Amino acid sequence: MQYLVRPKAPPFIDQLAEADQRYLRGRFDAHPAELTVNGDVIPWQDIDEVEVVKAARRNDLSGWFVRKIVYQDERYHVGIYYGKHEQVLTNVTLAVALFVVQAIAYYMQTSIKYTGLDDIAQTASRD
Image (tube, rainbow, N blue to C red; front, top):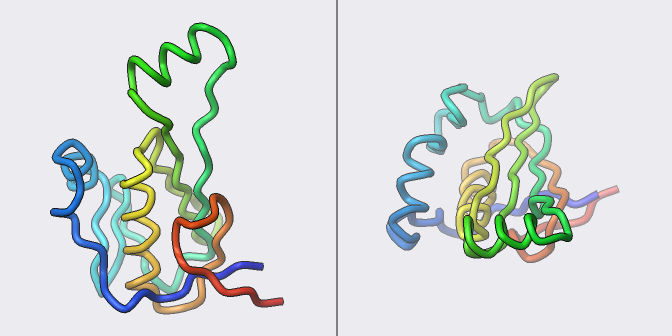
């Protein structure tokens, strides 16, 4: 199993594109006391796992249209699992996915399992 490794510094929101900053300010807030996602407050010690997956798109003209015209690039989903609950940030840019996972890794208070795309955050194996 892969677990998040705490980075030396938190990510900085002002390094993201303006649209990504607006998206995060409306849906995601990480600070030392707790995490807020889509309006739900999640205590750090309750987070079990974070997962990042590429958003599924059909392999036909409509899928191409959504991917290239509507979003202009690939999109991702970031799932945060805690207890019997989950919060998902859907159709986010790679930059937003990176920011979210790195912020969670920076503020985490217990080990958090990571699954999904490689190179999103530093991880360490544990059995």
